[in-house]
Length: 498
Ligand code: NAP
Image 1: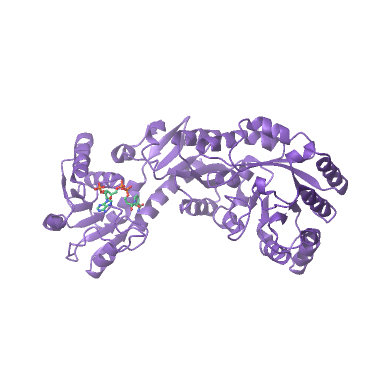
Image 2: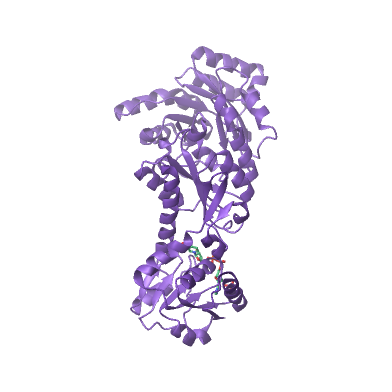
């Protein structure tokens, strides 16, 4: 179920927000600690007023949770505990279906009295523990402690500091699922725990709208619906994802989940912010993942964890796709076919003279792909030694002897002109936010070159604009990005269709 935590400062706004999101959610949680008005009145009136408004808008009613989160638990309530408990009691007689009571309340007589009032009022208790600092040392014992009372819903919200913590949270999910509870990893690292709530059997996942998020890592209901298709997921859904660091800017969840939806495949693609690839491999095995995209900075670090690699990975020294293969993982580099796809539509590379600007990670696979297609390649790099290393590696590994190197600068203009059938730009120069930079500003295009800039933010770099103005055929990095994503998607969909 999807629970909207309303973070509004007024009762009116809270009701408006819940009504606006009504079609995307299954429950609503009033975070009363965030209200900036007379709390007794707002808490007492929220359930009926919301139901009236939902009826008026022709929308269905849904269950309501009352929460007054203390500052120590990551909330905003800073009044006295006696007053908070009085407010909770007001709520228990006002039509809520659930109340969030922290586990330590069981230790005190007033806390136990609240529990009894809830029982008599037919309000189910969500028995919560929030650790905004980390992950408890013994998760199983913590979950057992939260689950002591039959009929309560245990809820554990904790803050993973790294991917090892994330693994521990995933490993604890069966315990919470068996008890019908809620397990949440907060913050960016914890986002997969929110997204996989249905797959892993958490009672609900929380989300919120606007800039004021109820907790770190909350996604918008619209994002859950439009990007992730969250409601399509369930225990039989095969998990895919992207591992990187950072990773939340990635457009890949949007792309791959859309393809899964369009093809009615039971797959779900989630971003994992991972600091150590070994942890990701453990997570992937625990979740029986089908595959993953690999992005910076893990494209090389993932290789030792693979049981098989195809020639594109060996050649590029980088892997951007892993897919389950028997007991292990197979690595593929779809950047290479993704790069070639738009270029080979425009020109036959056999015998073509091509200049590659840059000799970094992306250039290595690109120079390999060009040489394999029979092109003669000139690599120009700021650090010429790096270009030489690339030249040597390709000669030793693949016997390619048609790769020349040089220093990147105006003195290379003539060489560039003679290797000018295609110019491939692979440096980060010209990438946002330095959009006015041009790595070969000193070069005048003849208009006959095909100019391919692999940068995709911005879609059209200054270099490409200059090339277009001179009459060249320009290819944007967006096309390479799309090509590699299509190839990756083909691999993931093939696995799902088996
Ligand atoms: P990388 O390994 O860090 O290599 C960076 C390259 O840029 C090196 O050749 C480096 O030269 C050069 N460079 C950096 N700053 C420079 C400067 N001020 N002047 C001249 N040269 C400079 O990075 P990468 O992984 O290859 O990625 C490079 C670019 O490709 C990024 O913009 C990335 O977004 C893009 N990319 C696009 C796709 C796609 O699908 N379209 C896929 C992968 C990568 P030195 O060796 O002298 O440092």
